[in-house]
Image (cartoon, rainbow, N blue to C red):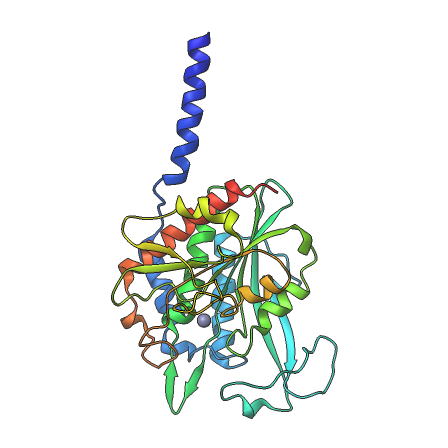
Length: 322
Ligand SMILES: [Zn+2]
């Protein structure tokens, strides 16, 4: 009996340790197809409030439906918000900010943006919010800014993440969110968090923004450990031997590295004292240029980056004790 018990215990230990290093299977072809569609000319660079952006919304909604995610919004997966760049107040109209980029044409008008939100139910009431913005820069000087790395890469990864955890239910609820209006000041992320009913139960935000481009070294960064050092172990255990997962870009005193704490939508969670881990690559030659296309991403790096991120989410889900 003793021997039997021991072997059961050692099996459990073995099974437990294996889960941290197990091979993550995703559909590579589908991942690449999805980033290709999201960064195609037909979506016109997905600029906030432009036709290509609404087309992207429809594509993401359709994917969430096919993946069988739970909808928690009034319209199916869609959380709309109105925005004006001037002070004409209307309910739900967002506080005014200075317009960035080439949005002077929408001054004085009220425009509608939309976050796409899906849920995978966990075993507890605690939640991990996984975010990636889908908007980009649109068309400038007659050129389409396709934004393949920024950030069709993060959004296509959301589908792979959702597919994986649909078949392997997590401990935490996963709120999988494609955010709008990042390129004009993270307005989608702000709206999402402001209106999220159960903020106290958000344990972590995992934000993906530019994870498919690596011209020289296959390096993916996870930023946030300087602020949240307790999350190091699950990330260490997610490391891959095909790409280098590095930690950094989160220490304001570290002068050689830019601090990414406020560089993308995770900043909105950080401001609300919700821990975050941000996955991304350093700015590259195609960053915010019309050459950020499907042709300039690195497919092998991207597939391995997404796999590593899924392993990290799985470890964090197990590890977070809340
Ligand atoms: Zn971005």
